[in-house]
Length: 383
Image (cartoon, rainbow, N blue to C red):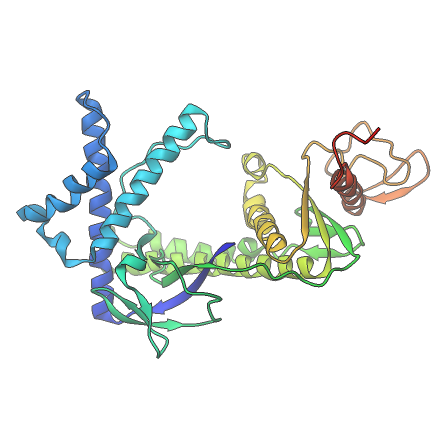
């Protein structure tokens, strides 16, 4: 399994200048390649192949006075920027033709130096390495200080250097990891995700919703108001922009940390995890959009998926149309309607249900049935 390990970088001022130069060169090559293909299409010419595009926007461009400064950065950075463009075009064509499942992918767009995220990628061809002192050695940039939070499980195949909106630098290593199955346990759990509580488990436990964005709204509002009062183009406005970005970064970091800790705990404690396959994108179009985004259900379920695969656990997603809240966990009768303001209800059989706990119990039962339905058996039984 391939995983990404992110660590914080602390480049020196000269190294920041070299990274900014590399960001700009990679962005220029990407935009030149996109422009060349758009112009070829506008003039009715054939699609420019990957090899011809590389010769045009990198090899030939370096010999011109307008693009001679492309030689100041590693050639691998430029090639990887062009590889990203080629991947974007292939994904777009596959989405348009229907070969790629899922939501439609838009055509590649031009990159801007004002984008909140700038990134360059180094592969093994670039000869990046980790020195004996724990620094990250990058070609034509130097040895960059790294804050190691954990050791890499194997030698990385590539590293992506990222600068976020708040001015922080990160190194994202791609490493190959082996599965680490945990000791088997008989415990299984169903999870009902919500807003009143982030998660309600089938054993009755309720995980409070931390509401990181709601708690930070006052601080964010002050930072945004200070930004609105700064003159456009001034140095103080640039400082205020960074201050707003740092406030949002703190919220995102806290949400990510919460999702990591909770998903790891659930995977370690249970052999099988059952969760509802929510349409987060659809819920984000409702009046609850801010609360839905603040909860971060999509990131949490994605973490459950890859951790279950790595540690030998089972993760089963239940159909989103399954009436988990309206179905009685005792007799199985489905209520005709169940408004959101109804948190406790009584079934005709006399059972009194907490809406969220009952939904988690139903998700657990449905997940077990789905998992055991011809699980490991033959399609046609023997005569």
